[in-house]
Length: 390
Ligand code: AMP
Image (cartoon, rainbow, N blue to C red):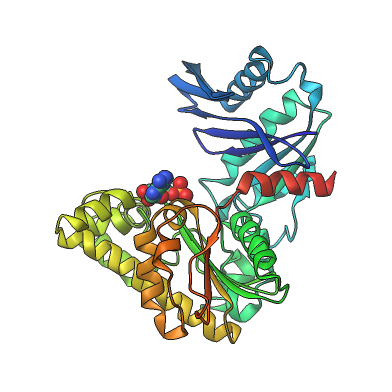
């Protein structure tokens, strides 16, 4: 059965067509620069990459191009073959404790959460509405980044701010990357052969977050009301004293929104190093002796170790640390640096295994806490959710 997994951003639309339940990828693709005259549509056909550059004014046109491309390239014969569409939605607030079959009411509820995710939820809705118009009779499911973390208890998700902020405006930690944390931690439980396992997932990509998973449930995570909180990332600062906002607004004559933009887009690896948001550039320049590149790496490692220590204590133990996403899956040096920083927990890295890629154990048999690389797959998780709710 063919299921489409969709991730719509404000000017992009990523998709993967999967064969379920085998979870094989039939094709995948991307529309970028939606809203521009020189938008780019790419799609894989066998080992070939098809690229089309043309004007694509909105998400509806983008989806039209995608479905037309699927038929024109012989990937499907008719639209009837697509039996379900799953959409990544960033913010599900406290409304969605589970993935949801999309109805008019669900769309209104997602819209009502836009205050909490002004850049993401409206973009996700445009993707949903575009697919609904082309496939009106096909089940569509919203899969939220926040749902997996809805098992956090109040002590973990509440900020120590006036309680009315939570009651009146929903100010609390929601956490993100939930689909990835869920996929990876479910696999970790299988590898450990222990449904009660305590694991910490390090999703380290351009965006990065940690999640403490106890017996399959998220009990704490590093991102907060928005994906700005937590560890430093490619361009995001992670945690800072909020007073910085006022100080910089004052010194640089900026609005709070502009300073927030600096914290989201010009901080993290990019801000500290002044070089790049990409870990490959950071590590290369660090090896060339660049102090600020080294600092960007060291600050991130230190903050990750802080979280691992705190989750170890909070869960009362730890069976495994899992690395996933672009950096977690590919940068052995970063993994080794983090594991070295938490060595006191009894972690012993196997340097031979850590130098390899793909799903594997990267600690020695003596290690008290295991560590694994587990590649994430958010699209498969989305397709699984569509199958579950069908
Ligand atoms: P993601 O957001 O999961 O796509 O991860 C992006 C981050 O992974 C960037 O900082 C990349 O530099 C880093 N990365 C390191 N090695 C690789 C690789 N071989 N392929 C893709 N991303 C990589």
